[in-house]
Every structure is written in structure tokens, then in C-alpha cells.
Image: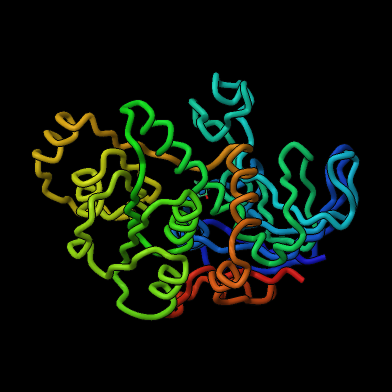
Length: 340
Ligand code: BGC
């Protein structure tokens, strides 16, 4: 069987190798079908983000998975089931959050993550996973199941919105989503599924993204200044500082789900903070996802239009040429690596 291997920060060292995957007692043996590429993978391979498994000089990349169970020791899974593997594993200590399986809220940073931090990812034709870290999907989802991990991040973001909105008795009727990449589009999907009026902003003026937004029943804007509607909540998926301030100025609850990667200093208008104080507003960060978020994501995808979900997968590259996935093409939304 074949596996991708990378060395963080050394894109030239990326390669595909033969690799034996030995079944592990108590774990599912899974045939890898697809792996999704996200900005984090690009940061790992090009910029050296992430960390190698101890004692190793390479890591198998990719944390967004889709596979089919070959063998299961658990009554909860059967051969043929479509599954995704969870990204994060709890820290060994464990901290108060990891002790209750809320590893996505790990307090000490000693968690590990498949394909990112110290654990091999899902970029291989066979992988194993403990049943506790696998999520069964609606078999009808097919390839769209590879969107479960990004959808889990978004499901957690919505859970934060709801938890924080409750604190101020805020009825959530409308949402602003900044960024129409996979995370923003999936955030819009979950907003529409909640019956909200959803406004999505991205900088592109045409192509797939505006179409995907309008097909969903949300409204697309190529410029945040054009959003004149009141918005109760915002899910900020770009990490772009002026957009963050604008979300915090407009919405009662802003959930930040994007990283800046941008170190240019931006002048701060302190009046934004006055508005946060006077409006009992909240700005909350969120990363990763827990098991309930994966389950919510799997349900949201199962309830979504299949053609719409498939429309998010805009490019497939074969495992042998997985580095092609890193070259951004115009109108890419989600690029996947075909492991078969
Ligand atoms: C992944 C998260 C992960 C984060 C930081 C994101 O791309 O979706 O699961 O926690 O990167 O490593």
C-alpha cells in the first residue's frame, strides 16, 4: 500500500512510498478513500507548521479523511461502513478538558493531531483508528463525506455561537459569514439549516463561490460594506484583521474560526471595544472539534443537498501526485487527494 510522506517546511522532500500498515488490536482497519487538503496542510508542507512524530524525520500528511471499514473489532462498526477519523487525541496528563474527552478544548497544548502534530495523518491507502476516534457516515454521502472534518470545525463554531448567545438572551435570526472557502461555505450551510438569514462575504466577484452561496439560499457580497442588513452573529473565517473588527462591530456574538497568517500591524479603532462593552457583545475563538461536533457535522452533511456538497469538491488529484493539490487554481474550493 502507498502513503504520502512530508517533511514540514521542506516541500521538495514530499514523496509517496510503499508502507506496510499492520492491523492494530482493538482498532478499525480502514481503506483510505479520500483525503482533503486545507490551508493547514499547505502551512505544514511549505512553512514548517506542525511537528514530527517523536524520533521520525517525516510525517504522513492530511487530517481530513474518508475511508471504508475493512475490519472492525467493535460492534459499532462493520466492514463496508463509510467513516472519518477524528483529528485530535487528548493529552496524556490529562488536563481538565481532555479528562472529559473535550480534547478540542485542551488546556495544556500537549494534545496530538493526526497529520499535524506528532501523529501520522490519513494520507495513506490503509489506516487504523481506535473506534472511539471514528465517526460513521450516512453511506449515501459518498465522496462528500470527506467534508466531515471541516464541517466538524464549523459545527463547533455554531455550538459556540449558541452557547454565547444564550448568555445575553439573544434571539439568533441572522448571521454574517466572512470568507467563502470550505469553512465559510459549510458555516453558511449550517446557518441556513438553522433557518437563519445568512449573509456571506468574500472578495471574489464571480465563479463558483457566489453560485454556491446563492444556491444555498444565502446572500453573497463581494464587499462587506455592501451588507446593510442587521446581523445577530458572525462567524469570521478569514483571519483578516479589518474583517474581524467589522464583525465585532456589527454582531452581538462573533466567533473567530480563521487564523491571520498576516503579521502586518493594523491600527485599532478603540470604539469597537466600547461597542463590545456597551452591547454586552462577545468575541470568541474556536479551533478543532470534539466528538459531538463530528456527529453534528455528519448529520448536517446527511441533511444537505448532495449536488451542493459535491460542488464544493472542485478538484481531485491522485495520491501519486498529491503535491499538485498544493498549487492553488482559480476557483478551487476543496481539493481532495484520491487515495485509491
Ligand atoms: C484543523 C483542526 C486543527 C487545527 C490546528 C485545522 O486545520 O481543522 O482540526 O486543530 O488545524 O492544528
